[in-house]
Length: 160
Image 1 (cartoon, rainbow, N blue to C red):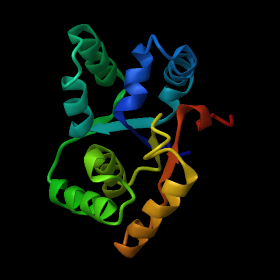
Image 2: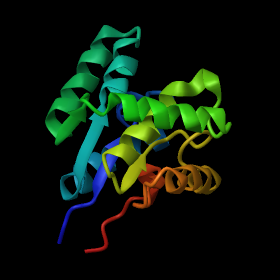
Image 3: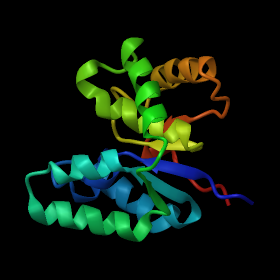
């Protein structure tokens, strides 16, 4: 059986080190220790840029180390123009606020690269059913037929 392809946004990695949210941290740790090996995990240069802006150098290094060990690939390629175009549509249609362009880029990277799931703890702009439907509408208009699920680590379980 083919492994599902999951794009990780920055929040998933950062919650591995979230001392102020022990429940989310525990679920995130369980995802990486129990389920992550059953999926192909990806991220983008947007994730790296967000990590690099974190003030705590120790956490930055730990997060980069985590990515190095768990990811199949980091997308930072020749599809950048298409990713930016699609992200621009999400912002223009007010699915994502202009101030949160990185969230639009995460979705666009996942769509352009044919991911099955975008995993996020960002319930406001990403991991919710309403946003999933809005993104899907734009994606279909633009010729992207593969559905993209927008889920939190709470929702990813293995059925084996």
